[in-house]
Amino acid sequence: MKRFIETLNNIWKIKELRNKILYTLALIAVYRLGSFIVLPGADPSALAAAADSRGANDILGLINTFAGGAFNRASIFALGIMPYITASIIIQLLGFAVPYFQRLQQKEGESGRKKITQITRWLTVAITLVQGGTYLGYISSIQGAVTPAISPTIFWVSNIIILSTGTIFAMWLGERITEEGIGNGVSLLIMIGIIATLPTAFFAEVITQLDNNILLFLIEMIVLFLIVLACIMIVQGVRRIPLQFAKRMVGRGGGQVPMAGARDYIPLKVNAAGVMPIIFAQAIMFLPMTLATWAAGSDAAQNSFLMSLNNWKSLPYNAIFFLLVVVFTYVYTALLVNPQQYAEYLKRQNAFIPGIKPGQATQEFIDTLTTRVTLPGSIFLGLISIFPAIVAQFGVNDAFAFFFGGTSLLILVGVVLDTLQQIESHLLMRKYDGLVKSGKLKGRSGMQPIGAGM
Image (cartoon, rainbow, N blue to C red):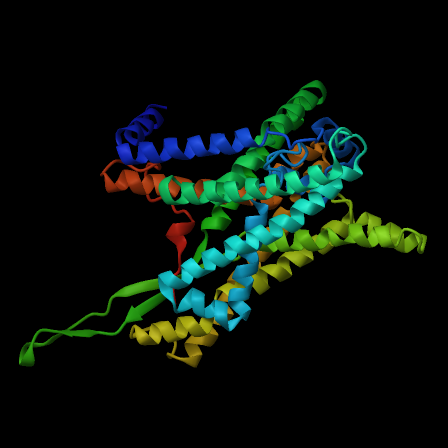
């Protein structure tokens, strides 16, 4: 406790760091305040009642989690920051497949990044307009969710503008936090939305288990703690490929002497794909809901199977979900890690992997090693993705079970590590002790492979 208080005191002493943290907290407070401002003409109580009757195992429940409850409150931030995330993912995927975006990302430097940022913003506006219209249609379909006194035209026109403005404002808040605050702004806003639902779910679980079985509650907390530790290990885990740089001649004329080549390494992440495979797999798993609606009058057995895929606790759902996460992990890792670029980069730097010939042999070695390293990472992601369904079978309430794995837990772990790593960097720059007693706290920015900007 004494060391913790001392660390907080050191953080407060650094004026720049103190101002960044206060600035970040102020913008987060603005975002949370906006999530309680209701759209004109909407009745949040009707939406909440519809959500309770619908359950939490569909895409609407997931969106509401990421929006911090704003979705079911018909807030001006009902769509949250998710349209911006969707636009960013689309642009990132285009960067792998479209030469124009590849050129912007890899060869045009700062000007290319500015163009990508501008395109992402305009794409966010387009996605927000589409999702905003869909959201207003969802509100209008719920009985009592729209005040009868308001004109439908005014309701649609005014609120589509408000929803779009709310998302753009949330995007602006995220960018301000990234540039002038501490941590990644967009990721922090998502994390805050997720954390907002945690206290309610936690206390509901406490009340339920204290009345039934306190021992089971203690076991739950131990399991949750171990899962968080495992997530931290997998996020920070790397496989180091040793490098050897060629000897250099130091001196002039006949006085030159050979200097031993420097040693370095390529850190291959165990989980290079991050949380993206779970997000992609989860998006696909929501499709059976639409198919079940279309097949409502078809064969009963087929319809029953489709309905089982809408239940996140069912065996078919979790088996398919697990396989999709494993497959997407390999696909996304293949897009991110390019062995050919690594081999070319090492050749340009006059470096080589001991025992491996430069060129094609190096490329094949890195490709094989990446495939092997990705296997435990993909299996871990698959297990994490279905773990909420597993713990729900042991009596954990559905809302609290989501924090035992899946997208929510990985985002929380990743964002917290990244933010703490930035705080520690400020402390070490001023010659204060870091946040950990020994060693160095590694966030995502500390795990960037060499040649990442190739």
